[in-house]
Each structure stands twice: as structure tokens, then as C-alpha cells.
Amino acid sequence: MLHDKIDVPDKDKKNYADKFDDKYYGNEEDFITFINSDIFAVKGDYDETWEFIKKDGNSFKRYSNFHLFINDWVELLNGEGN
Image 1 (spheres, rainbow, N blue to C red):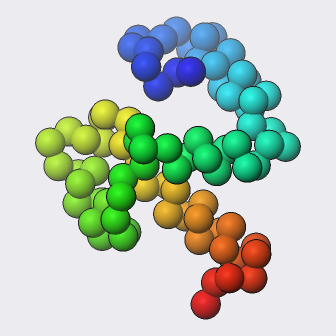
Image 2 (image 1 turned 135 degrees about the horizontal axis):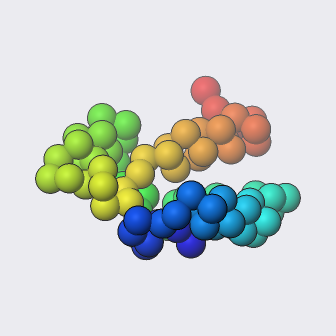
């Protein structure tokens, strides 16, 4: 995957993106597991996660709160949202 690479040429970025797409297209459950991984999914609510991501260069260290959106979206699809 691209996240551990530095100074990747544009042509290689496309190849990595295509591989990522191939791996998760039509495989939503694995993507949800991936996006919720402890490796980069910051724990907490929206405000807490953004505070963490903004500090100490964490935004450059692969941290994300995209899982919050994905999890809310999944809940809505499953009829669990408010």
C-alpha cells in the first residue's frame, strides 16, 4: 500500500490506487474493517479525533477519523441511525 512509501512517482501512485480499488471494490466488510483499524483510526468523537489529528504533526502520520463517517453511514444503511 501507498501509506508507507515516501516520494512515490505519480505512475506508481496510480498502480497503488488501482490495487487498493481491486482489493476493496465489492468487498465492503473488509474495507470497513480496514478503515477501523487501530493502526490509524483515531478513537473518540469528532472533536476529540480532530484535536488529536491537528497536534504534533499527526495529520502526516497516517491518522484518520474517516471511520467516523463510514460507521455512521453503515448505521444509517442498517436503519440504526437516529
